[in-house]
Length: 294
Ligand code: AMP
Image (cartoon, rainbow, N blue to C red; front, side, top):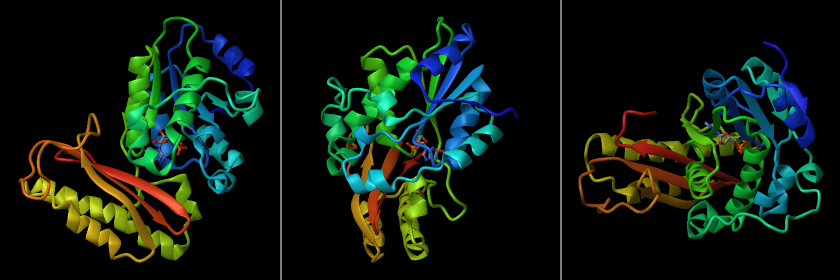
């Protein structure tokens, strides 16, 4: 496949898209250090759109801890190779100065009360920063005409996906937000750019996250009470893993379920969310329950 066009300025991105005035656009926002999870987003975009734009930008606004930002992997060369293999047309990889020429923006988006729960509780301001950059990217990659405009986000970051959908609906962004299922390694670990910071022992220990989710899935499939406490105990039995939360929520709203997970046999659908620290690395994962998916 042909090499994607690499652009690093907003003007160059607008110019590149201006060459395809009536083409549909599929946007895949990423922070780079790309893996097969990102690849599946690009494939989904490729299937449905004329022009596929992938952004690579490690957004400082969404990092609370300076160490996390500093250690976030940056692998532009290998990212470009991967993107060439899956048919991206344009790669937008701006500098921090290009995205925020005046330093911290005067105006940003607020993820509201929902943005302070789950991931937001451990990472204050994270979702405000995420929404601010996604709104900028939505504007920057927008088609010139009223051609279809689609964006692709991973189900792996379920709260992010819900917030981006909320933003697009509440603020009337003319973009269709599409979800792509989580891609996992063969042993069950959800692919993440952060996995490469795990030592071999930590990586092995991290498998307990997906095991805990599968335990809940098995109970959901058998229509037994989910008994999340036993999944919590499984995670806590792993010494290298510090559980942050394990929650069973509604798949659409991410609100707590109306039934008692401890006693009531499971019916319907739900989403199990988990977050934990493994060594220095914070990992998240989730699994839909009561569906045929994944
Ligand atoms: P990131 O580069 O981590 O910000 O992720 C960019 C996009 O890729 C987000 O929409 C993520 O949800 C998605 N993503 C990350 N990991 C995976 C995965 N394992 N499977 C599917 N999508 C993923």
